[in-house]
Image (cartoon, rainbow, N blue to C red; front, side, top):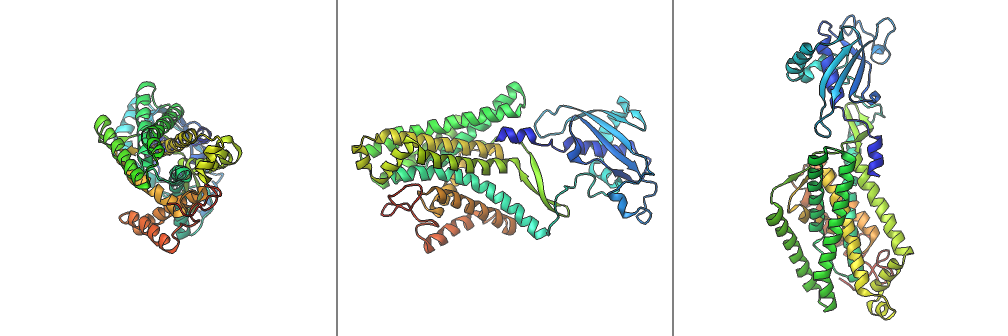
Length: 464
């Protein structure tokens, strides 16, 4: 899905911005310029051609309103072509190496050097005032215009759904393990952090060796994150949860042991790797407009589509896995009655091991998306994120797949709307306050806790 979105993404507007700022520096003897080329018409970001007209009289009373949309045939159309070298970093401006105009021909190297040093670096956006409409200058999205409050709310909803999808992916890990053994693994947040950290480190190492090949970096980093997530989750089962389960340890022992896993992973990363922030440059800033209100444009980021799409696809795949495969039938048998499943020949250890591996795989995907989306990871990034995903699972109804989805989207939307309207200072207070309020009204969560009929699809009672 990510590769498909990358293939159809438009280029970032850096080079287009440089070219349209350079145009008034070339046409320095005119008062007003009408830009006819739109950003979404650019096909090659290294050769950008701007079509424009020189207005005869800059006074608003002389220029009819129709000139802003339909160029008059009496005014000639000129062209300016900017040539760029490849950018050194992803989503960064290229290097302007040449300009050719239909009026003056090819700009000399001396003129280009002066333009770069004294016009582009110093004048900047002030050059846009030379255009007929300084607020639009070819970048206004051609999408439906709605009211400002509605547009702002739609943008917050999109942001909330995207973040909620990430919470939902991790909440599925909590649901998968709780539905099987009736216990919660608090270390999943740290597994996500470790997977995200491996994504950042892999991206930085590959970029230093092969350059910023975005497709290769994303694929390699995601595969490493999935490997780290599955491996680390399997290790927690093999060394902690598996032995405790064979000794019939109680819930308190498992909670304490999972807290020990949290601290062990955190301190291992802090001491062995580093306590500093690891920063990955924004690799993929693809976005497309959907609505606007005057100059405010509602945009959907490519990572929004990726996170929501991954949550839906993984959810559908997990439903199929549980309903149609041998693993799913044995998983449901254990969740209903462990003793009866064991007497029927189901290997408890094998299914538990595979379930932890599958949960770790979900953690790896979550960590990869989180690292590529936000780009800043440190040794304690997974703690609060993991608790919020756990809150999402409890909020929707612990042990239910639908509850994990629902809780994740509720938490994401709550964070987005609270931050958008009240600021981010008390965002986490609002999230955990919402959890407390819903559990007071519905102790089993929005969809209820799981019963023994089907650990992923219906409520289970008499189990904590």
